[in-house]
Structure formats: C-alpha cells, structure tokens
Image (cartoon, rainbow, N blue to C red):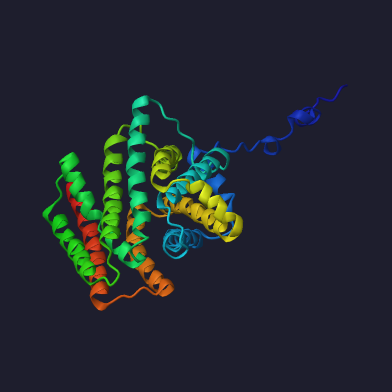
Length: 356
C-alpha cells in the first residue's frame, strides 16, 4: 500500500516552489525625474554639509566674487596702470564663454539648450550689444571714480528699470512704487554733490552702465518671452559671451590700438600681470555662476535683498582697502539711496500681491 503523499511533501520537493514569504521580490519604485536630480545633486558637496551651511557658503562666494571683481577691476585700471577697459571686458567675455561651455557641456550644471531660430539668434545678439555697453561703461567708470561712489550710482538701477519699462512696454507701476524712487534719486544727488573724487566723465559712464543694466533686464523680458525662446541664465550667458566678445573686438582695436601686443610685451617682464588678468577674468565668470546658485538655493527675492546689501559692503571694503576719502554727506546720500531701493523692493512686492 502506497502512502499518500501530502501537499507539503510535494511542494517541498521542488525548490522553486518554496514559501512565498521567502520568494517575494522587493522591486524598488522608479524615482521621478525630480528625485533623480536631487539624488544626483546630493552626491556632490551637498552630501557632506547641511543645506544651511551650503547655502551660507554659496552666499559668501557670491559676495566674494562680486566684490572681488570690483576690487580687481579698480586695481588694474586705476592703480596698476592697465588702462584698457574695453580689452579687459573682452577678456571677461571670453572667460565667461569658456567656463560656461565647460560648466554646461562637461560638468552638466544645467541642461544644454540650443538656439532654435534666426529670430532668436538676433534677439540674443541685441542683448549682447546692450550687455557690452553696460559692462564697458562700468569698467571705464572705475578708472575715474572710487568703488564706493560707483556702487552708489549702481544702486539707482530700479529707477532706470521703471523708466525703460514705462517707455518700452508702457507698463505703469503703482503710485507707491514711483514714490519709493524719490529717495533713490535724492540720495545719489546728495552723494554726487559731496563726492571728493567726483569726475564728470566717470559719473556719466557709471550712469550709462546702470542704465544699460536696467535696459537689458527689460529687453530680455520683452524679447525672450515665449516658451520656445526662453533660455536658462547659464545658457544665455553661453551664447551672449562670445557674441559680446566679437562685438568688442573692433572697438578695442580701433580705440585701444595694439592692446594684445602691448599686454604680451608687459607680461614678459611682469608675470604678476598675467595672474591679475586671468584671476580677474575667472572671478568675472564666478559672479554669474554664484548669481545662479544663490537664486537656485534661495530665491530671486533673496538675491535682490542681498544685492541691496552688497553695494554697501563693497563700498565699505573699497574704502578700507583703497583709502579713498569719504564725508558724512556722501555716506548719508548713499544710505538714502539704499533705503530707497529697499522701499522700492517692498512696494513692488506689495503691488504684485495686490495684482494677484
């Protein structure tokens, strides 16, 4: 008599049919693109420090690069005797083009975006021309004005932005916003009348730089508005920088002569000049990179607030380093301008909330 085989015995005879408790496979859930991007970014330095410390380091880098490029430009153009602001700006543009290519193509800091049409190309070219004008004027003004006064003039950017927005796009702000611009202008009038090292040409160049910076922001918002034309700030810099360098090339050759040959000749007897130029051009790119990183890790509003404080910090640092004379009226005018910029930012924020 054959003993009946139990189900347990039969199941145990096949190793592939072990208990389901032992055979269940834990299939991981496919992460979303946002989670994968976060995991990718966490694999770098952010995995070694806390988010708060990382943000603080990025903000400190942004301050150092912004103030550093101002100090280096001032030292080169005024104290070192390198009186070629157009060629120096062209070096900045070439540096930004090179570093942007490395950052986007090889380091993949942001996804690469292509220019899709001839129309988009000419829009970026127009922005590059305005960008050139602004940077050249800014560098030229540093030959004649102290950084403290230069930053005071630069703080009036909201005033020019409001004017260009009204003239070009017919955009009207609230009465509160326009009222906040009064101390912005009043402060710079006070600072100008009391500036010991006031220079008319330098003052006009600084105003041109500030106006150009405001015009670029308005035109950029006007030209690159469609979803197909919008470019990330780092990609926009990748295309604008070489265009700007090509625009500046004929001007530096016509106005500044054989500046490349003169620079090479001076560099043969003074290696420190090469260090200054390379360091200056590198820091000029870091200004744009840290500007993007601060916005990424905080917000555009935080960047605006930090920018308001940056002008005051740069002015204090420049006075301590270069010992340019200041007086109470000049400090008061600068403080009034910065206060007006803060009031303008708050008024703009409230007007946006009311509009929504």
